Image 1: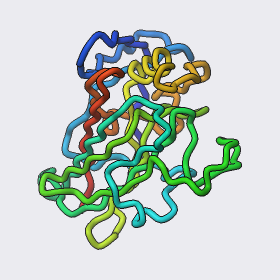
Image 2: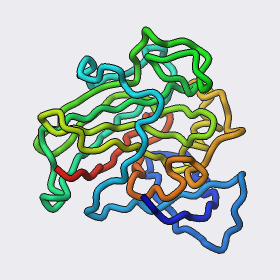
Image 3: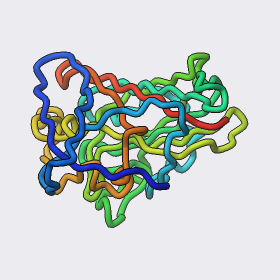
Image 4: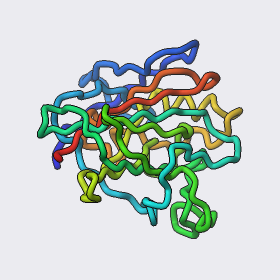
Length: 241
């Protein structure tokens, strides 16, 4: 699918208290460099969320991980409640109850559970199953996962994978959730006390990401809170059911 490319400028927001990481207007006159990123306006129009690759680390047996708490248990990472609403575009984007929602993401170091020994991660986690879970949407189309703010790895911006099915198990959408560049940079610059020790050297901003680079407005989350108090992430994903 084709979505417009956008020019990147870093909007670096201070973490002085509870706040929404609201988007900033894009400035098409700003020159593009590898050292800058762009915060984008969230597109809440009633249109199907873009389909994206499932990625190299899908959950092997998602039905086995029906749970809301998907922590790794190592005490690392900024606490984050992920509130995901599923809406049905064929029903005027009203909430879709009874949908199955699977999510998975990497740890603070960029590693995934259930895999190991690949080009992207050298540590073997084949017997682990953290940061993976399934929930069923309630009457408001909502699922909630208790997790952490994801880390990152080479060539990718911070993201969460999502696979949505209807109540019969039919696949409705495979997509990914994005985070504002300024938030990801802040966490990875100032979050060493929470385990984010990689820094940002080599970090891939959304507009240069191989998934989000053609436009990310419909997949952009809204995050409130602080590293000290924890984050709350909200997003509405729209499917045709």
